[in-house]
Image (cartoon, rainbow, N blue to C red; front, side, top):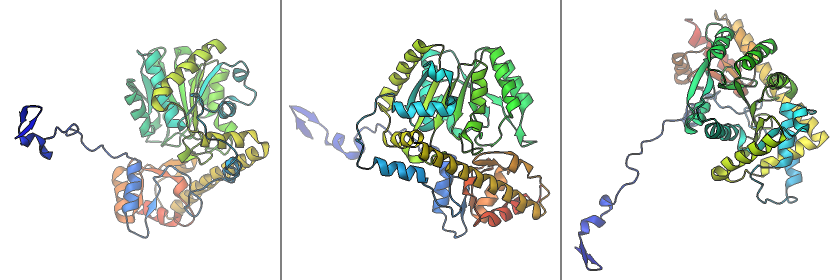
Length: 420
């Protein structure tokens, strides 16, 4: 027995096993379907292992890349700039330049100050702040998400407690866009619904609407008074031309929509770990934009207070220096062209092997990912027999394909698809 302040307490209550366990009901979280692939790859000791699951660019030697324009920007930053807190809305200069990429260098919306925008923690953070904004100011709405989509989209709107619905997007039969079903879902959704759209290089399918199809989608959104929220994670990285990759957004703006947009510099500047992006919402006028921005900042405050400075400085320096911006445009085109070239080369090798499957979709799709059409069972064979790692939906990261592994990859795909 132990006596404290005159109270007799059984000694057993002080035993380690008797202390109240606050977290005894916590179960291990399910592995992320994408990050789990990398974990399995790293644990594999095979010398032949290949990772085509990672959503990050690699050079032709399979190595991570730091762009020359980024190296130069960092050289200018080193020892010359302070590391004070940014405002809650982030770097004003970075945001201004980022809006020009999305809405156009000479955008009337920018001139009229009709866009509420804040720096965000890359595209994920931009989506999350918007999801919370939607929940706070349109609490009775839901979000329509394409099938399939980047898996984290579901997590983001779920944790913001926004109800989710889905709309048709990908057609497994054609390995292309199911445009008719998509349009039916847009027409049948309640007026004033929120839709999540991929601006370019749809993840995971690499399937994008044509310009004419985007115009039809925009028209129907206008008829139904829907709100379009664009996730633009791959501007410039898809076609090699940032202007071309922003076409969907420009079409919606031309048609008078008030849209939202998440932008990221993870892929197109290789700033994966810097977590630098932007959230923007087009408003009716400058007064409304001021109010909306203030609320976006209010949402960000308890999340992370203010965004990180280093990546924002890198982006600002590159986009405000004509020579560095020109270098960046050349480099992002080089990355896009290498991926496009790997698509064509892999398709050619499969066809030369005598594959009975049509691989036309491999070159019709665009961006970092190829939605191969491999079944989960075939993906399992790729991993178990050939030590090739990818997500079980058959998504291949073309950034992970290079001249050193493309023959091995093509042979493995051919072997697991021989039976059709």
